[in-house]
Image 1 (cartoon, rainbow, N blue to C red):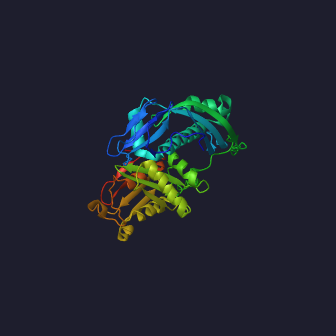
Image 2: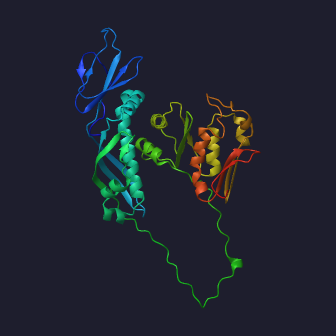
Length: 375
């Protein structure tokens, strides 16, 4: 939790006031453009005492210190850092009045909460990336605080909050993990090589889907359900439409599920965001689970084709969808191959392309778009 806050409450201005040192004030007048008042300036209430149309919100430009605790980190050599606690001090840049007003007008009373969250997420991502890209020995030799501060810590957040100071309060390493590799005997020159006719065939690739996990979305999920993390998590926003896909083993409780939706809607700035909770282990199961939640007619379910081979994951959607973008129910409509649900699915399945498989998504009868593999 933060030690300090960025803003005061949004209140109605009822009397004459002056802006204090170390503070700027956003003024909101009904039907007019917001204004930003600097230290020492007067705040004048509405001329009509019966109409309190002016609201003000103080915003601190003094250094603000936040404490952030991050758990369950993994180093490059597989060592677990159970927890790390840090403190970061940031200060609002008052020389960007337009940007401050833009955020104040957009976030309103939640501006302080939004700024706190942006700093917290930024610091968590910094810690996870810094630990993940170094071995435990390197972090201990260079110093964890110095490594994060010199190489990974951003200079500012949201283009307004400048980093003034960074401090490592505590770090808790788990007991070292020893990796045992099987002993391989050197070849015996006196022994004839075995016939290749009897070599066993290579094992077929596992059918279990390789899924992408978005670090930023995972940190949001972890705050709500730290003991029930998804196996895959990806999101996308196309135009004004956002979609988040999560492959889970267990359905989240209703209350926590609603909180997750609220969090992801804030991340993508979309109050109509679609959060689809998918089930399944294989590519076929995951894709069919995704398709079943798009609100499309049930008759199309049997026309979905998912072809998985050693070198390809080919998703062929029913051809009906190419001709009618109005198909759908529950207020949803099919947004095409360029829509947010398909974009999120491509990101979720991206590791298939990274491993050398060709990932293709398209309509039956058409040449689908190809991602990864040979072009």
